[in-house]
Image 1: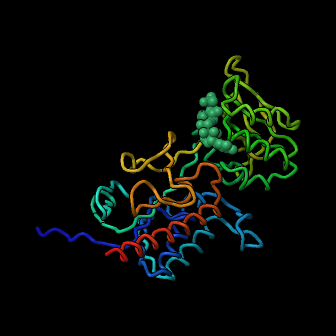
Image 2: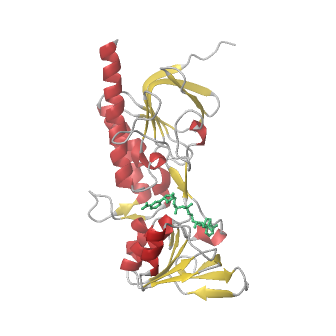
Image 3: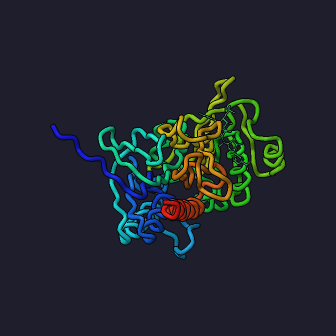
Length: 317
Ligand code: NDP
């Protein structure tokens, strides 16, 4: 049987969230003829949200899935070749980067832009899934506004939970913070902020059992004290999960420098990784801002970095 020839591209983009699509728009307009491998969830995290009101350019707001459709159409309009697939292995040893898709198809690329994002960690409750986007959220900055003047709960005790609880406290009437141990993981400074915010009530040693609602909206959560096993219901209309994110970088382990949580490390002020010609953009390299607009911005940076890298290589050759 004859072997299929390996396809070679100038620019391969892995991931199809705001970072990936923005990189595609820029790379396509720069004539790099980008090929994009979407991943299992085309459009990324925003396809699991409803209203997006904080992305500039949409004065009336938009729906997350619709926004990602707009991103896709714009990337396609300039000729991005978008393919549904999942990257199963890479080989970044030589100057030409090898990427295997769905364990079967090998593509080689002069430049690779990694925009595989991060996934929010969830508690794993059925009711959490049921109300995701309808009262349950993993992003206070994205969705807190919808609960203005209302009572909400947030679960988690790290820096993210502390930061998001104080953010929510500015918008909401009351914020219950559900902490599973008798102490925080967050830095002292962040803890201090939470403890000094009068409308945050911390409930220690407690875990969420269920999100309660009418099938369409949330009306409360049932929590249990880990020690006494006593259960109680808190009347809240919003439930925020802030128990950490996991960057989608498993496939790049051993090739790229990462921090202790697995986020790809980039050279400050750029999207360059430790491998020449491999760039990282969006949440896969950012555990701090994690916004669609900051991801899109770094996707643009990655395409410009890739373009400049190719131009410099051509100049040397
Ligand atoms: P972390 O991993 O630091 O904290 C996760 C928190 O969620 C912990 O308190 C953990 O509890 C709790 N948790 C985990 N699983 C569950 C569960 N099933 N039920 C209840 N609670 C659970 O994640 P963060 O997102 O907070 O932070 C990630 C990194 O980003 C950290 O290094 C942090 O310092 C950094 N960061 C920095 C910021 C800043 O500097 N401004 C802002 C935000 C994040 P437990 O403690 O019991 O394990």
